[in-house]
Structure formats: C-alpha cells, structure tokens
Length: 113
Image (cartoon, rainbow, N blue to C red):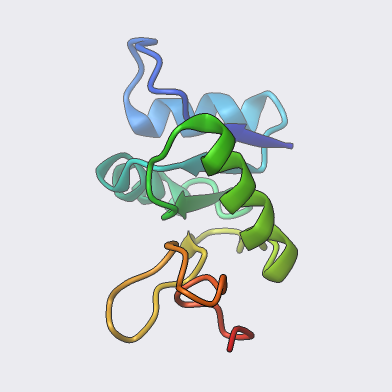
C-alpha cells in the first residue's frame, strides 16, 4: 500500500510519519516535495522495507496533471525500491524531466523517441 503526501499538517516529524506509515501497513510514500522526500528518506535506515518516491511531474491543473501522470505510468510504472528514495519519472541527462516533449514523449523517458 502506498501513501501519497498531501502536505497535511499532522504534527509529526518526517521520520515519525514514515514510522507511522510502516506501522499501519504502508510500503511507499509518494511526494512531489523534494525536501520532504529527502528528509523522509533519512528514516529508511530504520525502515529498510519502506520506499520514498519523488514524483517529478510539473504541477498543472488536475485534468492535465492526471493525463500526464497516466501517460508516464503507461511508459514506465513507478517501481519503488525498498530502502531508497527514487525519482519518477526519471530525469534526463540534461536535468529536465517529467515534462511533455513536442513529440508527446516524456522527457527522461528511456523508451521515448
């Protein structure tokens, strides 16, 4: 079970949030917040079966974001790695990623044109 970060103020440190997530059966945290993801990932030493995924798609209005998320998922589904922080979709060598290229392929898509 995966836990999406909704930026809810729950008065827990990121490490405590990861611990609570693990205790309730979650195996992965999805977040768009890079600093939160990096901070939460430090708790992975104590919870090596838990994973953190930084979703790097650019923020857009919900219908467009959902479309881009589904297209990215169809190309490369999220594959959490226990004990690690990963970025999805992966970033291209130019440092760009998650955006939509002119040909409709996601930048950083290792299978795109």
